[in-house]
Image (cartoon, rainbow, N blue to C red; front, side):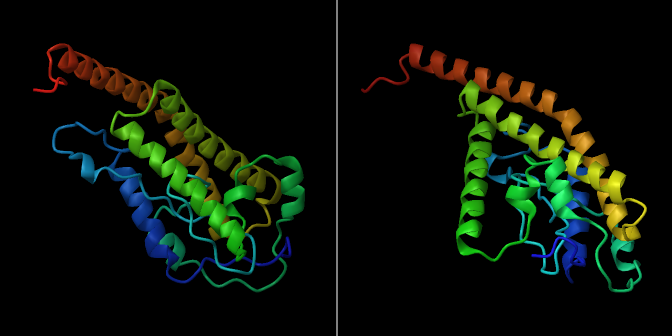
Length: 227
């Protein structure tokens, strides 16, 4: 894969990007808690995550719901109104970026691939985090698992910010205006998500302890005994 190949937003992705931003803003940048009034457990699901720009000539690989970087668009106009730019070498040298950010999640989840084994691995990682998310939301996760999930959320946003800011700093004056706007928006949204993580983690721990206390009281009252 050429590290300077021209990337173009795949046709049809604009609507997905706008819906992802809309859902994120409606939810206030967070996922509703199980047990909150009017929110049945079955209705709770990870907030949608939009595809990341993939700096290659192939379309972006579908993203994990909460397992990778997500660079999203603020409005449909930003995507639809962007004029077609002259083709040519893309100004980003991904090998240079990789040298600066060798442990960034982009290299594990964002780089386009058609390799079946790699796609299978990514699907397994996605399933792992979705399963843990469900355990956290249903208050069945251990305290260690709660911390593990939110540490991952921090890593996702921190890496997205690092990746986007590096591209903006090193190539911001050469990037197409649409791509630059997507990167800037990614930084803004991930900073907001990162700021919410401590409260969300604390709330999850409080819900977990309240759930565990109800179970202890139920067992103490004889609720778990056989007739």
